[in-house]
Length: 391
Ligand SMILES: *Cc1c(COP(=O)(O)O)cnc(C)c1O
Image 1: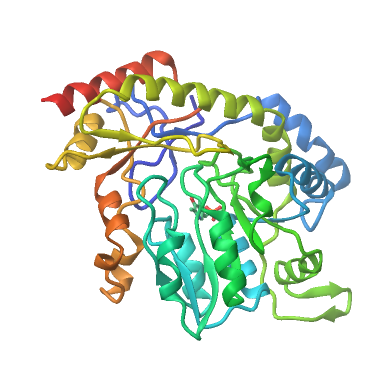
Image 2: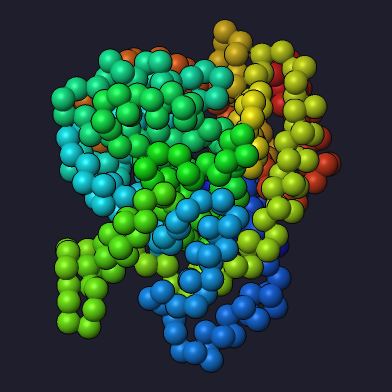
């Protein structure tokens, strides 16, 4: 049980739940990292001892890039030490300036990447059915300073990629997708990482596919490869040449080796997640006051998260979150608070301007979801929810 991780707190710490005497043995964490067997991983890293090549585009790194091009069905992949630095690198490489339109309904990383690169995020509202940026409310946010759109595919749902592409073309804007939640997702048979100029994937331990920490950019323009390689390795291009003021965001061989192991079981991982999701759907669909997600047409999802929305006039989300925690069932208010309500924002961005995002953030709860979550556990979670909601 060493590999259980539990991310209940809003601060997003990932800590092992090991030998905690105060925790009931039946505790159900909100997520749990997939791991290969110890032997499979040690077999995979044996070559690293033999070659002595620990990082800087080693053989594991090269192999993982190739395998991901195939699996994600994309043109190009560049690996990074984590998703966030991949996103910052994409923003820098595309030369974005001024304002970038994005969503407040996301993880801190999306907006922080923009701000840390000297850009101003402009927040658009989201759609109430799939929680992605609402393309119909986007165009009036565009000003002469706008250089790009940074939408987020949320929970395994995909954005309205066609409408966003049309707007970007019309106004000559770049599009970077935060695809951290959509590893392996396809839209009408096409890899999600082929839309926009660049897509960022996160391979953090809590994601559907992980390399412990890690991330990638996918893109169609081959010229970007060189830019990304420079920016993630200090701008070094040869033994005596440094061309740009790059930083360090390289994925190492141990991370890549974990990725190679986890990629072997990715289809099984997603298939198990699907079973868990379908069981939740079945058990929750008739509970009044709870809305569940409807699958998007033409989208092959990866079942990243299982959100429920409380629709009754009296919002009992917080009460339910606490009641479930008392029973050892850990859920998350994900994403709450909205980025526009973070302390650093000092009310500079009014969340009342994105009323749908605000309502969803106040009423969403994501339930435990990982491949070996048992039928008994899902049944127990749903029974507890039903009992509490009906009260
Ligand atoms: C996980 C995540 C990130 C950041 O990825 P890291 O690999 O943890 O740096 C960015 N955006 C979203 C939506 C995420 O869920």
